[in-house]
Length: 310
Image (cartoon, rainbow, N blue to C red; front, side):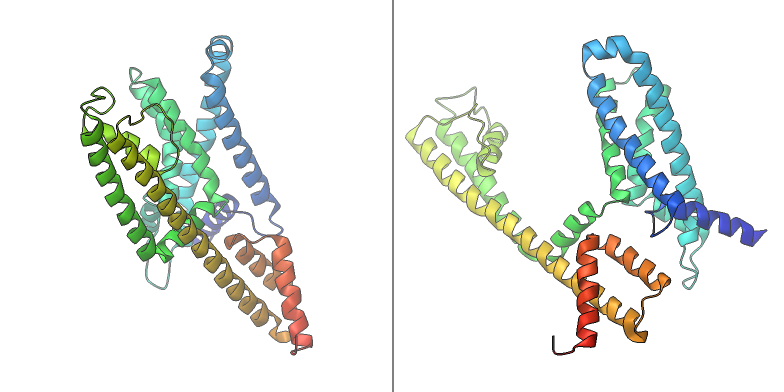
């Protein structure tokens, strides 16, 4: 009985996780959930159009109920099947694994995907605009099947010292420019620069080089501060962009090396069997590599084995 229960958990988890090579059931689930999330985002956007809400409000509501049922079943299934991923060697319990999922980034996003509906049902007087905005967070459910956010945060963490140093410089410039522009413009534009916190809006817009133009300095001192702030903003934004871009490139280079090492280990006997191909395909998806890139690396390793001088 215990083995049958654990096998069922493992099968449910296999379906819910990103599909592995040749897993048709899991692939169908992935595509279905992806489509449902996209349709939800479209529905939230269209529902904000008064004419559509008036004429098709019941359709939107019924679709929301259907979506919440699917997302709720998925969430409960993920919580229930989480023990299939527990670390037996470290004596991790099923309950601990469930809590690990519930309080993980993915678990919180899956919960937020269904929470607005139940909050609205329990407290119908709440502001619907806030709840609709929360429903847009369902787009983050796609992160189950795409490592883009993980890659971004990973790249930032690897270069956190440089990143934090640049953010510190940005913060100093932000506070100084906000204070200086307030003292320069407050007397001549009391409505636009009523306080330093109000001036911070102008400062962040100028530093990030957006420059809406709705608030502009008119004094000579204020214009000088604006020019220096804009130049400084270009430099700092370029630094931040360069740091993240270099971290991404370094991360991809490391992944290629790891992937090549795995290919070499798999080719020790000279042949890639089906299990090894599936394992390499899982690694390819985890690293966010295209099939073309992976095939090129595999072919390169094969050629270097045949001709070490390459």
